[in-house]
Image (cartoon, rainbow, N blue to C red; front, side):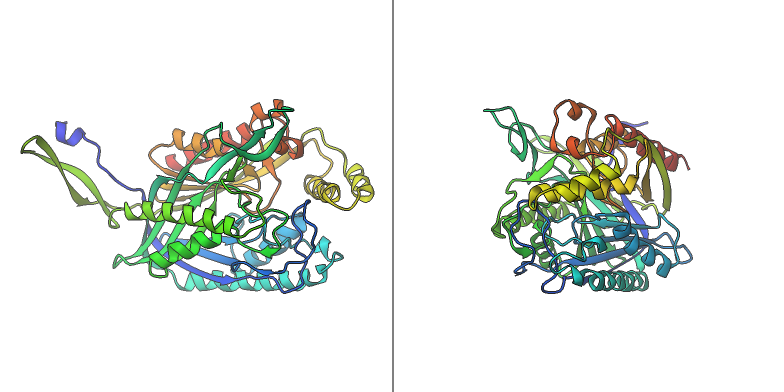
Length: 463
């Protein structure tokens, strides 16, 4: 091999297929229950900061292929199995697709409402059933619209950095207590991955922004419904890309929070969103034209001997594969369902009631069992992988998977097709952090899930 041919090209991972996108707003009705923080002193929202969205991107390898649907909703979490399956299952049924071909992810904004039918008796909770029906209808509509809008396109991925995310395990020096707050002493995962969907004329149709930081710019004192920093990020990116729909992909942010967190003023969310939005635009600006890469061309004598590069065509990959599997995890030392119910019944109104309610809902999801089969979903789109699960992974999962598969773009998706809260790192179980205290699963579970995801990716590369 010549020296010239041994110089690796500068290339971006791409998927060549049919892609379509559609979105709609899913703002809750005025007066619907909106209390999502234990520290909040209000049950109802005072208004809307920025619109909540439901967005769907449909993918297919070719005209006769069954499409895949990635859908994201600006909602916080699924409180119960009925809550999540009561929305996802009707969508899958209406689309006539098998499980795994729909990835339904929540943006996890903590200023977006709960949708659990069990909250119908709360102040404003009587509006939840109708809102759920409207969300289902909206999701089915945009999925069909995205499918209809599918056309030959190329999805290109670029990687950059954004300093918005901080570690959120803050150690108080006076007591040694670990609280949820910005910890500037630990370097946080700052990788930002941005996808650009162009039609065959090169016009941008859609952008996808994958980043890991809890959407918790706004805390319990905020009284407005909001998509958190995602709203301002979306608006900025769409403005600078001539209205191309911007889709947020919620990354593995179990231990990460934005620089400005838990504030009452919505400017915190807007500033955080602008920071992420400008970083995403920087990555977009660095992408090559679709279907091209740079290769070393020749040396040129000048004041210095220069090495010149040139563009050449590269053929994007067009495979679209799906794998759904599970990993058996050990359930932690948790109170029984009956004990959780008793705790909830006796807890005083306020943050203690809120904690007890969430603990009960989570316990009911897995039941009184010693082990649980955690579902994991993996999509392969060309030279990229989307890994989703109904948990909040720590960022270690996405950094590790990227190290194991450096030639591919790997995106880890939290709160995907359900919600079973955190999978903390094994080392954190010795530190008694908040995610450890509320985790459903025993130490070592995150590592087992990561190994399973790596096994699935490896098998799809071989196939």
